[in-house]
Length: 114
Length: 114
Image 1 (cartoon, rainbow over the protein chains, first blue to last red):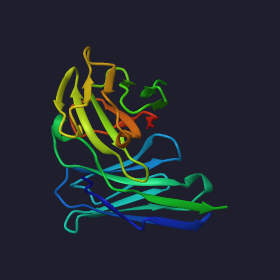
Image 2: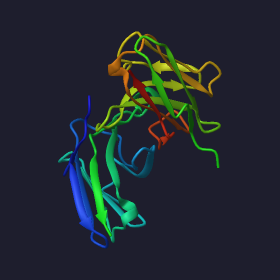
Image 3: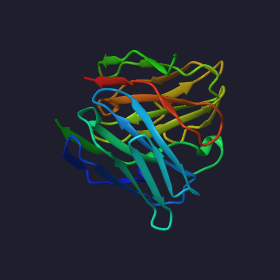
């Protein structure tokens, strides 16, 4: 079963614009992570935000977490054509090994037009 | 640097054949996860190892699926008597410790069952 639901399902923007992607989840979490997947390739970890954090930055990425609303957003600033990919949010609900599995949403397809 | 590797990258099997998929995690990583990703979907958890111990196999879809990690490093996912619904990308991920840490993914094995 999939816990996260990303919104929108697909997003098309012009290079240089910002891209905002949202994720909602259903149960309490330890942390939430965002991953990128290029066509035919594996998942690349982008950023992890813990349940006691509200905002985190990494380069052109900004992620927020609102545990009261069970939602997160990923902002990519000054997008590039190379950002074209599928983006997934994934939650971890537990604290110990067996409960540290990732539960993914269905993903958002981002297209950045040159 | 050595990341997670998987082999083969692509596998075509006739229905009813057995297949074995290999994962080489990052050296020294305690935790190893297998996920299944159907076309257009997010990955779904299959099973989890902490060193050589399989602590969670709740995501394995049937008793035709079997995974092992006998020496706590390399892992093999075996699917017996493959069915068409087994067609998917099988992803392996490893993380350093036994907690809810960042998981590093391999490129995946794309299995097609004819």
